Amino acid sequence: MVRTSQLPAVDRTVHFEQISQFAEKVTIFTNELRDTILAPRPRKTAPVFKTGEIAEMCNVSHSQVQYLATKGDGDLPSGTAAGTGRTRTFTLEEARIWVQKISDIYQTPLVTRLKEPDGKIIITAQLKGGSAKTTTTMCLAQGLSLRGRKVLVVDLDPQASLSELCGLYAEKDVTPEDTVLPYVYEQDIEGGLEGRVQSTYWDGIDVIPAHTELIGAEFHLPAMQKVRPGFRFWTVLRQGLEPLRKKYDYILMDTSPSLSYLNLNALMAADAMVMPMVPENLDFISSLSFWRLFSDVSKSFIKFEKDKKYDFVSLVLSRVDYGRTSSAPIVRAWAQSAYENWLHSIEVPASSVMSTGALAFSTVFDISSNHSAAKSLQRVRQPLVDYCRWIDEIYSEKWRNAQ
Image 1 (cartoon, rainbow, N blue to C red):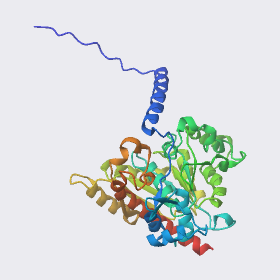
Image 2: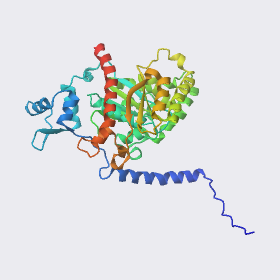
Image 3: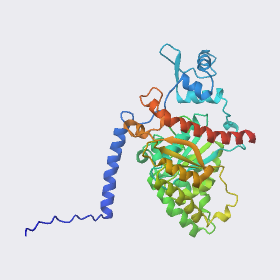
Image 4: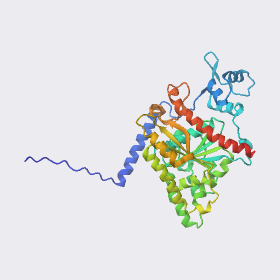
């Protein structure tokens, strides 16, 4: 009998010190990867719009846009002539001015907003990662801004992916002081949450970014309950965002895939909830778990929130695969049975284009119409445009009636 030599056992023990060393290593790798993906432009730029796109956004004809842009009275941005001059290009800022002045979309009087109607707060929430939650949040912000709205996005996820989509290098450009964290620690801090607002590359969208140290809120908020009897930990964010309702049409909050103390704050601050869901088995089960857990953890304070309500709860299927072997038809049927009218009829199809090359840190709204991938992405973009219109029309009606 021939004995075979045994290979030495692999020691898979990992000490905390090794984790720290690994974290330093991957930080360097992450920074290099960002630079590679985003090269040669390390900062995002907004798309430009053609005459036809302005016409579609404003619901007027191509010739009307051309006439108004060239009549020279200075009331509307003239854009930049392209080619023979029959087509013009407009910056994002110019496009938003056209929508605000020419379209039939009701525009809120933000400048004189001293009373109702206040801006609306919408949360995107999911327990499962990879549900397109962050991308959906950014797309909602962009889509609503293209309807003339002023939008604030609040990143509450320590992973800071939304901050990245806003063009910020989360660990290079953002410190813990730039996030909601100082306000969580000290509600009477100078400037409140307004002092944490930053502008972004996208006209009409501001951001309160995130940082990995947001995790500190998960220790501070429960500790304050012991230090200050009667401390209502779930109202901190709502109080901080209240003054910002006067400055923005929409405040969109992106949360981590958990029911953390910070996320509970967001849930109690929100006027409405959007839940993106990839139509796969585990994602559907996770979405159901969210409601059970939310109900369980809120029992300790829900007696103080008897008037709490959401204007709507909307489950939207995202990254839908329409292939023959897809599980989407089965999961869609389950979702229809479970969620009934909470399940929106609009679905966002899957696209492999956005995960390639320089588009990896972009959304479908970032792509100008002259980009090689623009036509391929239109089938993804249009449902999001329609979904933003659906949300905005709900609140346009409320704002119009409040005047």
